[in-house]
Length: 338
Image 1: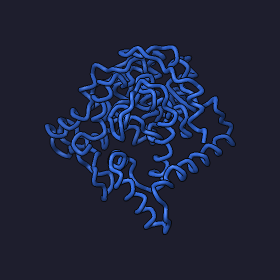
Image 2 (image 1 turned 120 degrees about the vertical axis):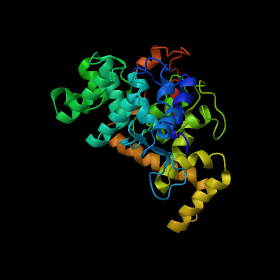
Image 3 (image 1 turned 45 degrees about the horizontal axis):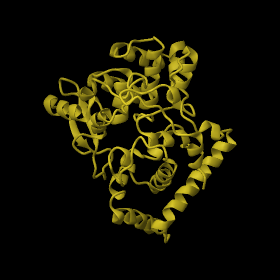
Image 4 (image 1 turned 120 degrees about the horizontal axis):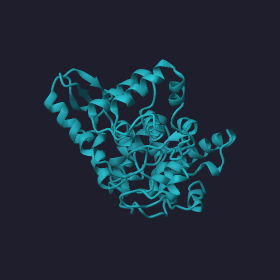
């Protein structure tokens, strides 16, 4: 993470056949190596100047997985090119140029829009024929439309779901109106369960089952197995506690495999709060948080019918594994059965 940043996952997910490509029409991108964490590291090293990896997003960070990506002359293009952002404007839009993804990420930062949502929106727009997949110049022009506030900009600025609806795109990768992140549910079923049931809409950070399914962290789980309700529930509960503690979510990679680390996190919370919680309280507290979120959503009109992935994922087979999302609705409904 320190050397290559979060984009080290580009090659890993591409090899696993779970890197959503060209608006979720494939799980592999032939240009993955060109937008990978390794490529970012090499560009920072060869271009020099302000370019650097191992950059901390806050003064106290000991992981330092961020980066400052330089232009060819060594001046700053953007900070930072993260996995999700590079994927959204890269593989999902068929773009294999880090200078283009960097410019698009910079525009997101400047305009105040989310990189995942914006990238997936541009991918949907490409699907609709507003640009060809891989056309970086046109992708930048579409981003500028949002800033200009043109009619097209208003459509794109409302996100992927609105863009798909306006242009009649059936392959709309959203849950509860929010764009699906950089892990293909048809190739990694547990993260699909999290996407479907998360109270935030499609959200990998609410229950990162990629850890055991792909990275073998916190155990090993078969990514194609469908019985993932308990796995997703446990990850969502633990994540809710980590998020509420104020810790960076990336400590999860360590504490999932080191029991003393998890205990240490609970002890630090006790030290600040004056509580006497134990490891056994983590699940209870996490479920209490999720239950409150759930109650908020229900009051806003959400029902179990919204805890579903897009319909196209049930019948469109995803290359290269040619699998669909075949997790039953009964399994999805088990996630919140507590």
